Amino acid sequence: MNGGHKIMGLVKSEDNQDLDLEWVALIKSARSMGFTIEDVRKVFLCLSDKDDTQETAV
Image (cartoon, rainbow, N blue to C red; front, side, top):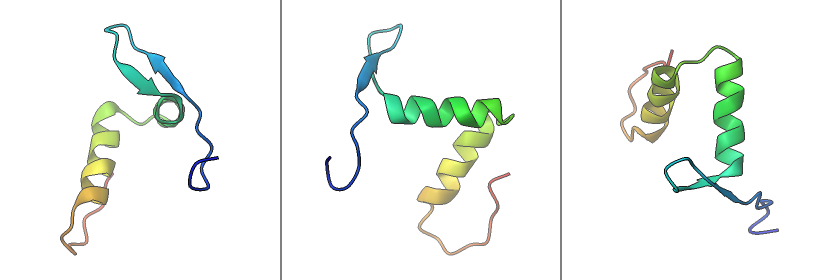
């Protein structure tokens, strides 16, 4: 355990980049629910936005 979170490990992508398995599982889940890559991008942008605007991700 690391800071209360289980470390799932890393895998290599086709272009040899390290990918966190937890993030891979999260993105796969989003895709299986019908989210597009652009939908996921919008969610991350909204979550990272420091402004207090009331914008929805999707």
